[in-house]
Length: 288
Length: 328
Image (cartoon, rainbow over all chains, first blue to last red):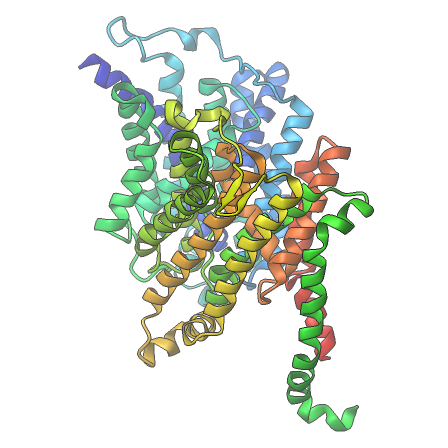
């Protein structure tokens, strides 16, 4: 029983990384109509930015500042590279972010080195909180809390601020939003930045848990796609739950059948597509 | 010229058939003689073989991508399955080349045919996301099924076998192997050409241009996408099978999603609305990769930069640009 809990909890932590990534991807997929292949690259950069910032501003400072740094870079990429492609065949934005992903990974490798880096977290966070549930360390609790706070903030912004209302309205009908006097270019840029900030946060949290490597982004992005597909396109709640579900499933599989720990994610996706092609909370008629 | 402006399309069409056989003949001659002229220009035969392999894979993908309008980003899966099928057969079952190639093709093709129904209802970028995610599944199977597939290190312990005929046998060194691949390339290209010139192929192009209208005419676009997906998977698997024989090795990277992206950019770079576009794209890509990886460690950035430049400045691809200029 304890073993099962251990696996499930490990999976839940990884699931939160998937969920944070999937939320950002889902935001960008919705309003910017772009599958952001570079999301993993931005996530990795978030982690490495934090690594560089820790000696300067300490762990907590880095935790707050690094997502903004990643977001800024995302904003520049959106303005300079992705914006010219709105309204063109979606294939092109896909290829562009794909190329960007390759460059970001390569640059990370060049700047910080191909070897993994240990990401120092405050000592007291490493201690288990309970003797029975030894896997419940302070850091893992922090991951859960930080992810929940970020998700809560995101839903608060979407629900109660003008920006959020515009984003949601834009998802439904961007043309009408534009004709009502909202600058949709600014709106898309803000939306993209928001998504990248979530990726940056995921990068920092994942860095503390799994260590920093230049390829961490490209290995976490595929499960995030699966999270969106399982949750359903167009639903942020779906992306969140999708990420957690496949994380936990993968964590449990790691305990009982380690060889299947990744494949199980894709089997869940196949099952969902068979039984409920739209995903758990997918919108009707979207991309169909 | 302004007088003839009104009949431009017709004259363009009339001019094309006269020039196309000539271009095709030159192209075929270049391919047939490649082992002779490649060393003269400072290259080597295996590089030509690699161009053929990448070209076949991309042309297979392009049936779906360029002609049916399905954004598949997961074709490395069928390529890799073709490679693994061939490699595993040679390693575990015996030294029969034809059987090994057939196994690879069937393995990759069947996988595409089985997965088709799961994705055929989706559109646009969502189609891309699902195809790429499924592709990753095979990558992890190859990585995790250690004792059978060689895991992360890839599958070794097999090599090209001599082709035996009733009258003797041929040892497949570089040059004979080039012709071996050229033969299969021709078969694959012919199948694609034949499909595209059949009513089925015309319907595929129709599905790309206006799926709704085709539905009104009573064509089942979903089923059409599925058929295109399956044929495309078979051809790409054939290319994968050749790739395994070329390297005498298969790596899980042959199944990795980055390779899928390379196939797509090859199609776009050459011109995905053109039958031979992917071939041109493959030639440029292979040469550039060969060169870039020998001069800089950051060749991944070079490839990434190429992605961006193509998208921002050459979205029609090289043959697309050329064709436009000729028509104008």
